[in-house]
Length: 335
Image (cartoon, rainbow, N blue to C red; front, side, top):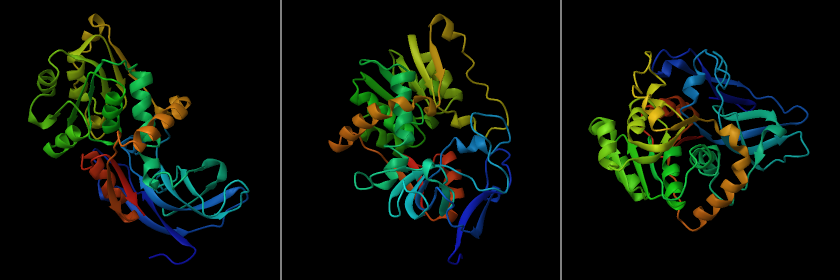
């Protein structure tokens, strides 16, 4: 329990070896300082857990600094300003920021973004109206260079990003959209969201399942999984096909290098484009993305799912479950 003047946070207790376990995390109670000049204190309402966080738990050089052992983790969160020493951000405003995994965040006012909580549920700014949505839009449109009439394959299609990619492709004129997911229930949900075809990747070799779903091949692949899914997509991509490499969740907890893709040489003759990307490099698309998504949400043509866990103490298990595919749509923790 915490008393007034205190708050709780989750710290990285140790670095995972392979799959994370609850023992890699620790819940701490700490003093909550008053804001210094230019700072605000935010009472977090909802926080995000995301697959990329697994890479930051390793002590290796990457595009984002690794989490420090015995220090709080971080990630996207949204909450209410409860104290402010800044003229630019006021008490009572709802703000988006990057210090999740804690009940309260103390940070510079310049590091928060005020959002309109009357326009959409707060958690939407962690999902369809936030970096998740922009990742889907930028990866499809800018990285994979989507064109109307394309046949699009999305792996991890029932996840937060994948489910939006498929819908955005359909709304933008895709001829066919195919998704892979890890259960019959998720496959059924993809069909409800407008995917033309979907399959459970546990039902057989992904290469065979994809060829059955798209016998004439695919033009675009949006990769959230890597490994055998990427190998299958390379097999099915048509000449001049494009792949946006967003994530490789099948490999994040592996202690051995992945064998796939073993068919990369096909990219030569097929003249494929395989492009990795980070959403941070596509912030210029935010106004265009936001305008389109707000319209799609308003007319009901774009839907978004979320899986909600309750309480900060549930965050480690929510993250572990996310890596095991227990979520449909965005996994968030309500604090």
